[in-house]
Length: 342
Ligand code: GAL
Ligand code: CA
Image (tube, rainbow, N blue to C red; front, side):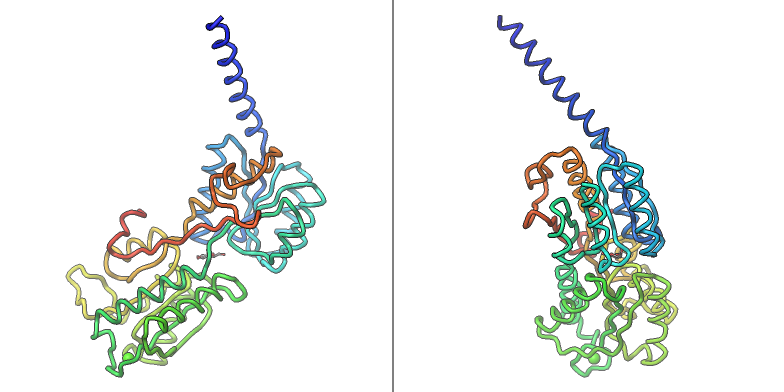
């Protein structure tokens, strides 16, 4: 009696496990990335693939090549093909509405990532979600890092006027991460009591080469001695600025080089090259933009929703806010803890 009950229980458990995995492996996710040639989004993309493998789901990723009309067509193709869920990194977040409409018409869950659509777009379809990070946090971390450095290093006030002359290198215009990081890094420096002067500010579209070129221009117009700090909205642009400083004999690193020739530069993302630069003392710090958890959360929502299961904090293992949002926290990264992220 006891034995047969156990056997029944075992069989039931087994068939349940089989049912879950069979269900999961039936899920095909179609995913558009605004462009493949983006360092941070490449991290998210790779982590989405991994998360899908872990859950036994399939994911097809396509490159929208920074063109919204191309992305719209890709979404149509995915729907025709019969995908069970969509994960979309919009090219233009203000053009996300029609994509949510397409998903709704096909009764498909749609998870937007990294580029946040308006709340009313998310509200227009019950199976629409957003996974991202609060850009205010990374802005604040960058501003605080610079403020701490400036207070601890009186020599960083190169012209000795008691004020901090800084450069701001911004991401793409209209991107919530560019707007909020810029606003909040400035606010954090002010809140820390610094007397700040913005001597230069420009957009470099998340791009290392553009970051380098913009920084070169600033050096030419202001002179290297007119610049005391650089705050960039992401690591690629920060690394471009570091390259420009290197060609002036600055930020060559602590390894046998003149440590007084250092201008603090901060970014956002904690990409592998940025962690390298931090380890070598060429860059002051950054914040982890957590590609792994953002990618994983998006895929978990997609699989749950595709299987017709309820999407809740418990079912996905990430806090779901307002039934729509998963916010992954940023983490401050400096020379003290960079190894934890390598
Ligand atoms: C930001 C990230 C940038 C860039 C951008 C693309 O969150 O910091 O490096 O990847 O997203 O939308
Ligand atoms: Ca100064």
